[in-house]
Image (cartoon, rainbow, N blue to C red; front, side, top):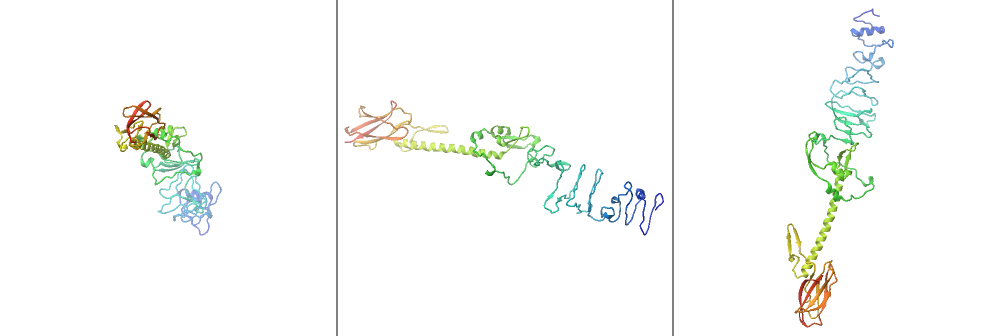
Length: 409
């Protein structure tokens, strides 16, 4: 037992027992060195040997933590707790590791932790899951140069955002509103959208697709400088919302936030099909008109439809078709019976074939009943003598055309 006051060296070949306060006094201004050091004392003045500076290992059996100061590995046999404002755990040598048991945690409530460029991971005892994260209710942030780069919220389900601030993300994954490639744009080889029939109901074809497509306005525009300033092409979401609200997204206050361009494909496909159906119907009408022109040309003595007079009206070509026609009788000359082709359009009230001799004396009237189709009338002239006769087509009291025929007895 030393005397009161400082001492320099205390040596003994057997165990030396010191008073509880002697160690504290000695540690104030001197170094206490021993190959085996066991602390004792009351609860109020005992020495924390776990923090004493010693050479070698201070084992857990002797009140230490098993720290090997000369190696690269620090093994925590139990919990390491501190009440100080900040604690730093450093692996000095390159390639050194800090290892926690599978059931252990490294946590802080008011401070921060850093990997200083090294890998920080967690693993389950069976190595089934690798993880890094937090069990608190605070958002998980990733920072670069002390600025927020990525945030995972604690919403259910959590949202991931690269907004660079505490702004709440509207979508599950959200990038900043910027036309700059490295800020607000993403790139991938493909982006697949859930679209199977098994997930849908109340399926119906889009109504009036052409009218809706025609109501949309495609525009060129420049982003404002604070949003990247790039030139672009697209739609105005507020305008689209009035026509196709299904492709427009709004925030929790009802303000337009975004629109889904790719969903407009469904509308444009149906609009194209509607326009195609109209084009097909028009093509069929044109084909029928060509047949009509050809028939009219043949029955009026023209060689083909190209011989019908054409009026050039700028970019529009209008075929001048007579509303009612008669053709040359067949056969001609004839011995008693002949047929005369004719066409009377729909809408005509009265149509007659008037037969007269060369002296313009009317001999007979034949009513023509067919409308809108190519037809013919069979004429018997057995009671008349040989000679040249005239026949005229009279429509609603007006002579439309006159031709000659020859009777041979």
